[in-house]
Every structure is written in structure tokens, then in C-alpha cells.
Length: 365
Image (cartoon, rainbow, N blue to C red; front, top):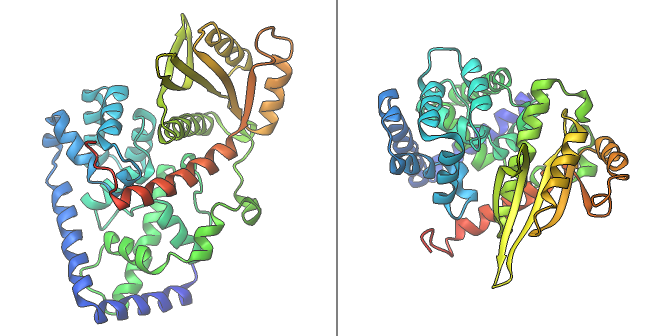
């Protein structure tokens, strides 16, 4: 980490806080309220949650601001995980006795639709001296400070990496304390990152492929089994998010025929004409033949207007060769590079954050 750059920005930030004491006091009050609320949810209270409790718990998170209809997201998370299972895993993540590294990895494996941004935000509120808040803004700030080996993709953010990032957060807090800051924890560090380290050029370069050639995701063949599963699930869920933001009803792990489940489905109803459905299969370490069978079976549904294979260029070439001789599929199958899926998801997420922040449409609309 570039300590000279850190010291410079810490000095500027603390000076701004002295000049605008009202903002400083408002920030302190907001941090205190958020910490108090989430710390009040003890293990016993989490396990006894009802649906409305879970909605209140999740909807307050900053990470939920990308969604206009937060109720839909919470209901989907409960439905796809099972409410009792979700509460159990959430209690273990927040209050479990294992090291945070193990709790993080276990939760990522066991729970769908709650990713690193939401997980780290909850942990930061409950354990603000130990757990950093990690999201796109934190990535931008850490990268600007020259922190090396940052996780660009969700699958890279293992429990071990999260612990390392929290250590970096504590280094930042230490420098802030050395320059006279008080009431310090890693949530304070997040406010510093948000207010002081969001450099425009860095933000813009996040989405410029030519500016970040070393950040391209690796070929799926280079991933181990666990990494491949995380990549598969990350792309599957991002496809569902993209569909939802585009106005489709989207779902993951949808049964299309006996013994065949596809990764993501987009569905729309057009007037009195009926349903239009698009089917996506993500290819990482699984069988290409299985992918082709699933897509072929899905085409038996007359509502299915398109089927799409999603992977890296090498895997997509293999899928094309396998599909080229399959009657009824070769001329209908589309191909999507999963790097483009990630880029489109990031762009749409930024758009939704801005639009939702305007509050043009009430959530209950």
C-alpha cells in the first residue's frame, strides 16, 4: 500500500471533517444507528425471525440500493434458500464460534443470492473493529492506494482473502488514528474510502477492458473444482439480475424437463400472446453433453424463443463443435462470453444505483 498517498488523503479527509462538523456529526450518528440495529440481532433473535424481520434486516443494507423492489429480492432469497436454512446460516455467519475465514467460506457455499457485499456489510456493522466492508467502492479505494492482489470477481473473495482485506482496513484505521481521528473502526474506514478515495479515473477504468488486461477472469479450465463452482454460481446469479433489471421475470435452477435443470431463465408475458422465455446454461467444469441435452429439452417448450450457452471463448468453441451436429439446436443456440456478462452486470448495477437513489418510483408501486 502506498503509505504516502494514504497519509495525504487521511489528512485531507480529517481537515474536511473539521471544516464541516455537521456532516461529521451526521456521519457519526448514522454509523451508530446502523451498528446498534444490526448488533441488536443476537443469534437467538435471528433464529426467531419472521419474514418481515428478514425484510427489515436486509432492506436496510447499502448493498440493496441496486434494487428498486427490495421485497422481491428478499422473498426470492427466502424462497430459494428455505427460511429456516437461511436463518441458521446467517446466525452462524454473524455469531458462529469458528474463525471468520471458515464462517465466510461456509456461508458462500450454503446460501444463494447473498454475496460478499451484503455479507461484509453485515459483519462490519456487527464486528466493526474486525471486519471490513467490501464492495465496488472499497475495491476502487484499495486499488487507488496501491493495495496488491485485490479480488476483482466474487469467486476470488475467499474467507482467507476477506481476512487479508480486513487487515488492510485496520492499517488504514491506524494511520487515521495517528493523525488524530477518534471513534475509529472499520466502518469509519468505509466512510473515509467513500468520501475521499473515489477517484474518477479509477472508477471509469473498472469497466475498460483495455485498461485492465491483467484483470481478465481466467479460463475456466484453470480453475479448481471449488473456484469453478463459485464462478458458475456467480455468472448464473448475474444473468438472473440482468434479466430482472431488463424487466423480465428471472429465476435460477429451473426444471425444464424430467431430470433437466437449467441455470437461468428469463420470462416475459406479452399482452394476450402468452409467454416468451429465454434459457441460459453456464459452462464451467461440467459435462458439455449435459449442457446440450438441457438446452435441447428446453426447446421442446414452445414458449422458449432462445437458448444461450455462457462460458469463456475456449469452452464456447467446444460447445459449438458439440452442438454443430445436433439437429434442432445448432441453428438456434447463441453464445455469450461470460466476461461480457460481468461487464454488463456491473454497468446495469451502476445505472440502477443511480436511478434508485433518485427515488422516482416508490417501492410499493
